[in-house]
Image (cartoon, rainbow, N blue to C red):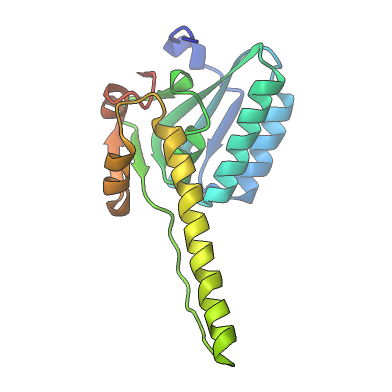
Length: 189
């Protein structure tokens, strides 16, 4: 399905405006706005963020996916303004590429999930192995979740998973025009 390209006028009054750190406070504001948004027609979700909690971004994204299925007569559209970093890019991945827009000069930043952890080993050797395996399982599961998000983000674009996995460890920055040229967003406003 190819949705019609929107004009700047369509974004004049976003139903949901988010800015700042992707955290629980943003999620509560998002849920409140989503609950009062029209159940049909165009609903713009505007965001500017330097990042935050990727699991909160996934929760917001799952709400977008769920509400898109619940109200098919409603078009939920993403508008990134100035900065869509990290968790913001994760959130953007839950919108179909045809429903993603960026304002001029906006930058996307995509990177791998981060972890900071000290592993303390103490006790019988068999429990030390279990502790190490538990930490390895956590890392492997986080990588799988991260890569699912990456696949959503690049679906239908000219960006390959190999390219993304090569660039993400070093923080991949794309300006709005490059994101459009690569098919990550429908248009730049």
